[in-house]
Image 1: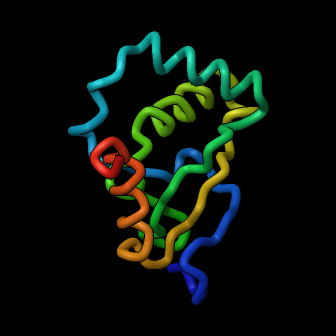
Image 2 (image 1 turned 180 degrees about the vertical axis):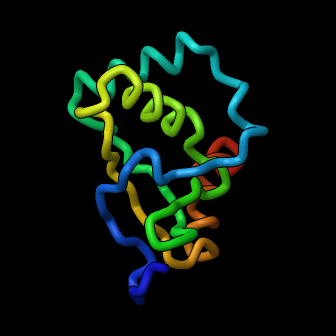
Length: 113
């Protein structure tokens, strides 16, 4: 597991080491996922790192399904180009409670205006 006192650790992780519950994966169209995947490949990577928690030595899980679209797109990018799509930028979160408040504010920013 993550052995750091820092709440966030930036690193490159293998796309295939990320898991997410399947129930939230159907709300995006295949075309949207492919368009983002192609953009990720064209840009040389995802411009907004995924937020994940470490669940094992080399396994991770999306935090609160916050970036499901981005996750699906990096999976598709890896399918389209296994070499370029193999790794993804990620913030590995040591304590999810410390970042959940920020995630909730971002997700519900209209309510805070």
